[in-house]
Length: 101
Length: 174
Image 1 (cartoon, helix red, strand yellow):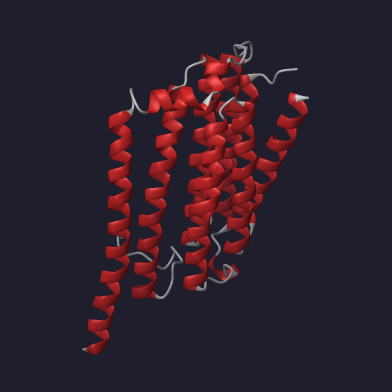
Image 2 (tube, chains in turn red, orange):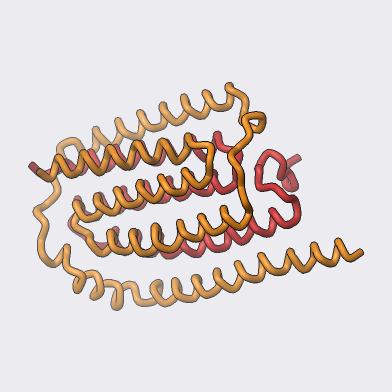
């Protein structure tokens, strides 16, 4: 039996919300970054599911570009974490409040 | 059969993603994110896009998450201390909010697509040749720009990580 597309969409929604909880509750910069990657992955799954549903490959192309942008984002983001760590000796986002109040 | 494979991958993805957000050790979080991404690669194959599955394994788990592990190793990040955890109110607020969000979005998607049936997989949809045809004709310009973006990201990442060290050295010299 073929799997209904709605199941993929609901799974992606669940993964996205798990990632949201992680991004909101974790303190460690790296852990928040990982949660964001999880949310990005859920969005990619939605795009692939719609691509299958509409029988149109455009969704796959968007996922391809999203993956490449995610690679660039990870490189720059991790470099920023290294830079912050060198200055502050921590990446606990509680204690990095340069741009907050 | 397809249903059984879907359920295996879906449950794997859900469980490992909960481990990602719940585990205190960043290394364990990263490794379970690898499991989540591999399960998603399996779902991509079920959705008829083996190209994306291959990219997911090579690019995401092979490159990006290895980068994460390197940085965790470099910064020697320990487990989160319990004292630095958020207040229970914030944790429960985030949990309830996300649960409501997940419920609402799932309900919307389900109402919209419960009846939708995907068209049968055609060979042109699955084939790598079709992907390449589209990528190198319709999407040629974005493809080239992605190359430029990646180059830029590498240069900026190196510059950011290096420059701050130089400034810190100057400060300590003073």
